[in-house]
Amino acid sequence: MKTYEDLEGDGGSDIVGQVVQLGAKLRARLDKIKYKVALMSGKGGVGKSSITANIASCLADRGNKVGILDADLNGPSIGHLLGVGNDVQLEMRDNGLEPGIGHQGIRIMSMDMLVKTADTPVMWTEEADATAVWVSTMESTAIRELLADTNWGELDYLLIDMPPGSDRIDNIRSLIPELAGVVEITIPSPLSQHIVTKSITKNNKMGVPIIGLIENMATYVCPHCDKEGKLFDGEDVHKLSERKDIPYIGKIPFDTRVSRSQSGNLFYSEFKDSVTGKAIAEAVDNIQKFTTK
Image (cartoon, rainbow, N blue to C red; front, side, top):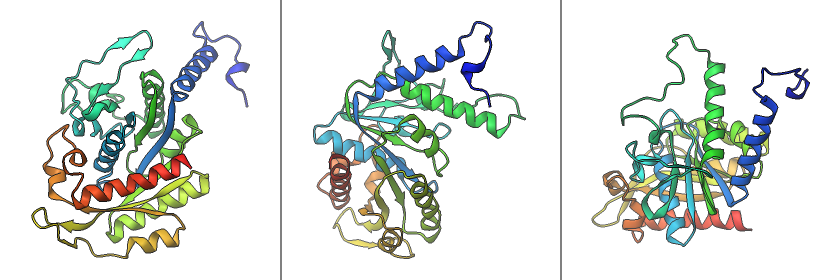
């Protein structure tokens, strides 16, 4: 099987040189970031992006320099959650593309900031018959370029908000071999637990470190009296973590104020002393213990 080095001439495009240059640029970016953590869910609709944003808020509140890469290219939401929309004027400088700056100084890069309007979909081609392999290649290239071209600067944490499913972790792991680990997120429903189990199994087989499992929407919290009630039926998520032999690092109650928070005004920064705010802080405690051990 031939490699790039075996090609006799490439029409002057210097493919090998471009690949090497991009790899060196990526390495230089990542070397300035202490800990890279991916946040995953087996399926959509479990509040993964909201949890990612509020974990970032808690980390920043503790004095950490934090960035978020929105790797959910086709359903980006991190920019909206942190008050950085497609109307932001991104600046290209000699040392790279300046990220958007969200709430608490959190640095953000998202496809949502690169489209013309808020309702513009991300389309890799206008051809209706584009193959899945071609689209997947385009998405992998986009993630590499977002990582390498963004001037992240020196960060304590780069959180990677992954798309639903587990297929993209292969791409992230190849780009970031020193990935500190992944946080798996589920809700108590049987379907969500069933699907997140597949993600956990894949990461174990690939040797990806699993920081732990967060149970989102574990209970419902009354915003008036802080009393908790059960929101979903299903097996105790503690049992799932025990069965898969991974740490249970967070039980996040559902609080209606999370969904009512205005764009850019994160729940944790406003309600850190609430039941849900304290649960987020406990999950962050566990993430920091894992990454700094």
